[in-house]
Image 1 (cartoon, rainbow, N blue to C red):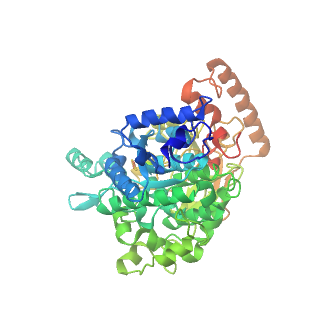
Image 2: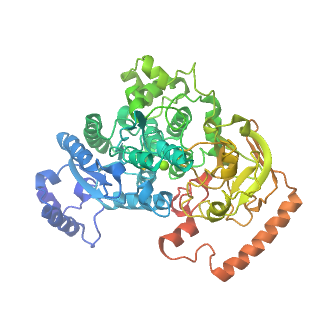
Image 3: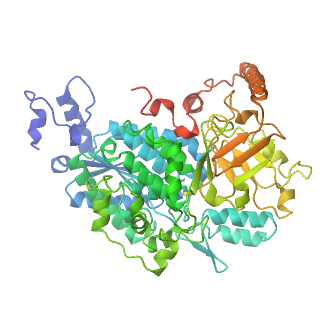
Length: 597
Ligand code: FES
Ligand code: MG
């Protein structure tokens, strides 16, 4: 570009790339650009650099986010890729959210991070953005924000951590955090052991080393066509990870030039592929909530993918990938077995190969150009379609009077399959405090056939929808050897946990006419996986009666304690007023494609 053009008052400033994008309005566009140049030059950039397409890099490094510990090295590699291909790389920060350092929950902050991401992409003069994320909520937040901003966005994840080793056994966050803690609680290992394993559970930076939510979202991002095939699984500390970062920088320059926007790349078919991968890896129920939030940001796809779609895809898709928490292996093993490239080749007959990728080709063309030959180890970890780990529907969607708007069950994680079709008496905990108080009480009225019910952990009832859905087995039953029970809640569970656990029940109990909120001790509850049914055996009249009493009581209580939706200040108030239900993604209603313009 001719620099003097920028100051030629007789010519309008029409270009919309590089530094000329989204000029701050002073009523004089030339002056705005003049001023912008004053300040970008203060950062040390010359005219030559400023004449290039600008590729932003979203920096989510934080001292409180060890899952993003390698972001500085990744940024350096991304910048190299950008500069080698004629772009100008400029990084900028957004919120970073880590699972363990985000009170009350990381999920509470996901929507805030998505808003930050969207607004900073929109506000700043970038032709494309490389979004570096990794930890559970960050990738969903960046996809949500990126789709809404609808400028070219290239996700790059930080990658999984390495497994550690304790007394000759490999260990990794966070499945083994839970199993070791349970063993310590049960007195099976001592204090010295639990302290020693604490040193090894997360031995390097990077995301949790199992197929938890972070790894699931990384695989889904590949399935959506937005990240290179090896982008989901290369270890955070590997040189492969740096090469992927460099490649992403190079790709970003091409994507910027072609103006490939997320809303035009991503179609219904892209999301069907993502859901197929989710079912084939049999993973995190959290991904269902995240995917619904992402889908509902996309004006052309929202509405065409619902909770039902996950069930339909599940009926056709077997569970193929043998990783922790359900299997024995770690993400680095998945990488060595061929990772997403191997998996996508394996499930090719189930994929929509016409879906586009960020590189402008179709998924089918990309797979054709990158063949994969299975070998013994790869087919053990990534089973062929003819020899699955579980024939169909790792994740199922239940409905019935107890969950008119749906509930999610990870059938593949059940430890006692007879519970998948089970009728039992409800034992109700009103909230997490009630549960903590009574669950280990020796006088608790529970048998192995009881159905444990936890209320008030939905998006509104307990902002952030905590991962409290894994109701612990009551101690007295645990002592009798009971390992699994049918458990129901309107909350979530960690992608690294397991059991016969029904989650995301909607409408949640905090809503006055929620049937789930009306369940009482002793009610008969039926779960039937074949019929996809979740039913409360209480008459309609009795239910109407209970709902009337509850609604009146709630009105009263809200009036006296001022706890009605919307009376809180700040982000908490915004959250309670605007969060939608789990099957919609627990997003803010005003951020969805169906929301206000
Ligand atoms: Fe960050 Fe598990 S805590 S991915
Ligand atoms: Mg998690």
